[in-house]
Each structure stands twice: as C-alpha cells, then as structure tokens.
Length: 608
Ligand code: GDP
Image (cartoon, rainbow, N blue to C red; front, side, top):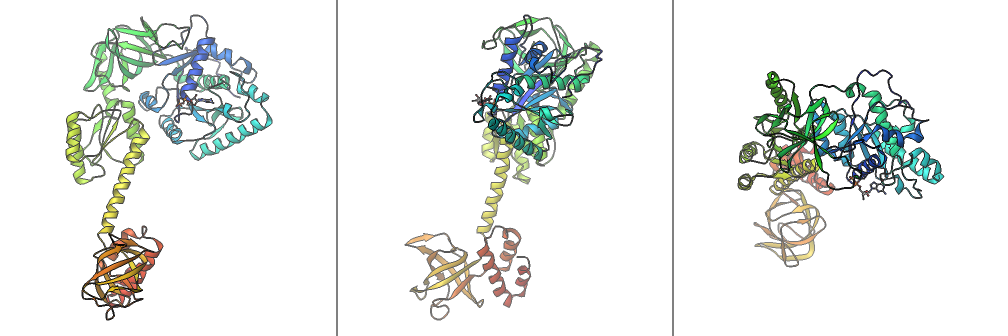
C-alpha cells in the first residue's frame, strides 16, 4: 500500500471533512454510530470529539485502532483527525456546497455488499463526481454472509484469516460482482489491498457496521488518502473563517442560530460575517459561538452547548448573531476581514447564490426547495434530463410562482408544473394552483420527485395518445358467424367473430371487395352493450344503413373497418409501434383493398 505521506509540511493540516453517502438501509447511520462510538471510547482525556452537526475522530484514536495494521499501512498521521458530518445522505451533502465543489474533502460510499448498487448508490456516485469529491467504498454487512464468525472491531484482514474457506470465497464473489457493477457506472474500484494508485482506483473496504470489523482499515485509508493526496487542500490558513451554513435553527434564549461547518481559517466572537438571506445578503456580527461540552458518553441524547471564544477549521459550530432569521441553508458563510471589504464579500456571496436561484423568461418548470444545496442538486438532476427551468428558488410556493407556471402551461402543459422539495405551498398559492389546474409534485427524496414528474409526463402522453386513438377508425376484421343472423335488416343484426383488431360503435364497415356497407350501431354480448370488442371475441352487432342480409352480406362473409385515408396516415405515423401484430396485418389488408379504388392508400403500405 502506498499511503505514507510527504515528508515536508510547512503549515499545519486541518482535519479532513468526511461525509457518508449511500442507498437507504445500507447502513450509513449504523456505520457513523460505530465510528463515533470508537472515537468516544478510545480517545484520550481532553480530546474533543463532538462538534455541532459533526464528530471528530482524533488521530490518536485512528492510530490506536490501526495499530495492528502498522506493518501493512506504514504511515504517521499529521492530520489532527477526521471530522465526520453527523447526518448521512445526499440531502445534507448537497448543502456542503462550495463554488465548483464541496466542503467535504472525502466521502464514504456505503454499499450493502449483499445488495450491491441501488438507485441512491448511483445518485451518490453522480453527486460525488459532479462535486469532484474523492471517495472510498465501505462494502457493508459482511457479517450477514452465511457462516461469518464475528471478531468485533478487528481489522478485516485479521478477521478474514480466521474465517472459513467458504466464507472467504463468498466474500470474494460478492466483491467481484460489486466491482463489475461499479465499473458499469464508470467507477474503477478494487479491493483495498490490491489498490496501487489511490488517485486512480477507488478502494473497497469490506466492513460490518454492526461488529466493527474493517473499521480500522476504513479509518486508516481515509486518513492516509486525505493527508497524502489532499495536503494542499488541508493546509490550515489562520485567516478569516470560511464556511457553509448547514442549518438555520432556533437556539433557546438566543433566537435564530446558524449551524455552520468551518472549512478554513479561524472564527472569533465579534467577527463580521456575510451569509445569503432569502431577501439578499445578510451582514451581521457574531454574538456567540457555541460548541458541545466535552462528553464521555456519546449516547447521552441531549448535548449541552457552551460558549467558546474562537474556533479553528475544520469545525462544526453554532453561531448566534442578530438578523440571521432569513439566512438560507447551503449559503456560503464568510468572515469579512475588515469593514472596507463588506461590499466585496456581499457581492461574492450573491454571485455564488445567483447561479442557483434564478428566474428566466422561458417555458420551463418551477422548482422550490428548502435549501440552496437541495435546489442545486435538483437543478443538476433536471439538467441531466434536459428539462428546462423557469424559476429555481428557495422558500415556500407563492401565488406568483403559480401564476408563472400557468403562463408556461398555456404554451406547454408538460412544463407548466411545480416541483417542491421539502417546502410547503402557501394557502393562497395552493388554492390558485387548484383553480388553474396546475400540477404540483412534492417529495422529500430528489430522485423520487423527478421520477414522479417524468412518470406523469409519460402517462399524460400515453393518455393523449389513447384519446387520439379513440377518435380514429382502427383496423378491424370480422367474420359473420353462420347460424347467427338475428335480423335481416333495419337494422341488420348478426353474430360476428373478431379475427383481428378492435371494433367500436360508429365504425364504418366494408366488404372484402371494398364495398361500403354502413356502420356498426351497437355491440352486444350476453345482453350487455359493449363500447368495444377485440380480437378473439364473439359478439352481436347491429349495422346501421341500407344493409340487407342475404343481399349485401351473408353468413361467413369477412368484413373490415373502412378506414379513411386521413386516419390511415395517423395510424401509420403515430400508432405503428403500438398496434399488435394482428392489427398490423389487418391494416395492411385494408390498405390493399382500399388502394384498388384509391391509389393514394398504396403509399402507406411501404411504411408498415
Ligand atoms: P441507513 O438508512 O443507510 O442509515 O441504514 P441504517 O444504518 O439505518 O441501517 C439499516 C439496517 O441495517 C438497520 O436495521 C441496521 O441495524 C442494519 N445494519 C446496518 N449495518 C449493518 C451491518 O453491518 N450488519 C448487519 N447485520 N446489519 C446492519
């Protein structure tokens, strides 16, 4: 393994910020709990492990748990530890946004090894690639492999030495399949011990979040990769703090508070800060910085916060400042080094935000989301599907948004819709949408929100097609059944067998020599009136028009639907792929018959 780090470090390195992503139920939360638990149990006295919204795993802990790996993974840690973001999943990840990238330095992509790649795994790969964040794969739940003997908290390589041949083989197979699956999604991954170049190949560490096996390797590899390959990014600047707002909260006794991840510099009490607000940039002064009191047991549910005077990157902190009620989650958080530069920083913040919140005068959907990060993620996803956007904004759905959607709907009903992520519609907006018949999609999972919308477009288009199909004369071929002449004329009523296609009331009929013989008035089966009948059915039909059985038609005659030229044109251009094999054959027969008298029909034969 090539994990030893560069020898010369001029300035201190800060803790890399680590996020956990992956499909639901693959074990993200369990893995984070396990890692945090390890940090609390193994830390040394005085080491801070808790931040607001994040947890620190000190290097002393990583070195301790990776001790048995010393021979295999020779490195000395120069980073002070790893800072894990407490909330897993891509909604939060998307709020760790920073222009052109992410505040997260590295990610763990959790995949249940028994299940493999799932929709949110793919989505995670997409967002990690879009933000250029390196990642390692935790192939989780290895303890579920049949016959697995747990060796709690041991490195995977030592546990594997003690597993049976069958278990090792099974793990190999699962890994092999996972690697193949990942490669089809453009990820070049490999079992970590076989990785030579960590810049090019994504290492897979088999783990059990339940038993803790493999956690030592996972931590060692995260630390190794970050300090070896990301040292430049992790060089700690002692300048003004830069961060990102993860959440806007209420803090008892203080009012509004911001949960911020600081990724560079130092934040101090009384610093001037700029963040983005719903109605423009907010400039204010830090009144207090809060951090959790050191704990001995992570399982204590309620964490008390205490005031600290300053905090250095990387850190998760709660910031109290006046006037921040309107701050937007996902916004950049900048300390302004001196008062003359306030305008410059306001511009910086707004420039960054305006690429995500926009209004355009085009036919496109209306998107409202709760945070800048989720909004940006939805924009990316819609872009990938080439769906145009008219309004992208944060906050609840307003009447004005609905008016915009109804303007679009007049031109394009598929784009005149509203997509809501984790925000509500104001009552008057909802009422207007109902009145204007504007469709609102709302879901708290991005891919589902977009899937719902796309499925709706498809089903609407399908319905339109069906309506159109119902308005034209479809191909049909029927045979008059011998012994089933119920009435000779006015109207003639006969029993027929449908040899192919669909018959409907109102359908004009012709004989196989092309002679027209009136239209179907009614279809009946066992005393019931039917709206249509299909291939294989035997029904009674009454025929409107001057038709007399025995003179115009007789038993065993074959009749066809008499399709007008304009309808043939539509059938060939729009429904060719929807018609079944027999209907297509019948259509060809009809065209042949019709073209005897009307040669224009013949041209369509070639297109079938
Ligand atoms: P998340 O949705 O990705 O956060 O998944 P969770 O951490 O909530 O885990 C989903 C389920 O899988 C829970 O019932 C966990 O107890 C279980 N689970 C997670 N990791 C493991 C593991 O390594 N082994 C086993 N056997 N179960 C696990």
